[in-house]
Length: 255
Ligand SMILES: [Zn+2]
Image (cartoon, rainbow, N blue to C red; front, side, top):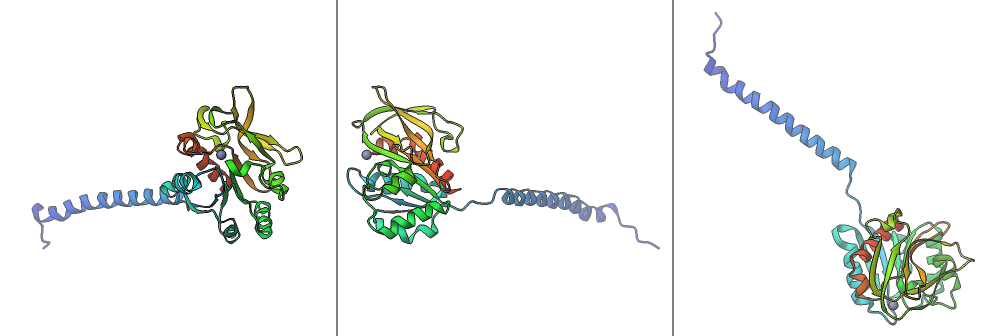
């Protein structure tokens, strides 16, 4: 004779199963969704940047070593090393994604100069800021010709001027206002017709009126090079538009 369980003896186990199985299913689905999301959007490694500053006329420690390093390091965007020792650059070139030059002092060591050219020829990234866009090195014309495709030999007296985006579709201009005004030195950036040329992304205009390239990409055959003529002091480095430009430039150059 079969034992017949009373309904109240079956019910507790049955009730647990009814709750447990859908619960586990939901957990598994959530886990699967989370795992798929992680696979689709893996955590990105910070971009490895070497920033080179130092030299006359600028407070490199405050605005580059201080503000720019902070701008680039936020939320693990970049892993930035700052140096004002131009001879130290050589030791970093094989372990960085972007070389951010902004120095107003020469690279004296011929081996360092050669290594920077090789670094560019190998297709790596460079961002050239403010002082690094000057015609600074009479004994190193290759720098301006090949890496900058020109340069500045003069600028307006420090004061306010307007920057206008001319190619807002370029990734370097993403999220940057179509126009913004700041106090800075308006560099008279001229393109060398013997160089690879540049693609202008934003211009700076003074009251004369004269218009000069302010943000641009150098058409180097291999390297990804962005030039940003702005950056004399805190009036640019602390500006939201400048911070966005700098982060975009580093990201684009790192690809
Ligand atoms: Zn300056």
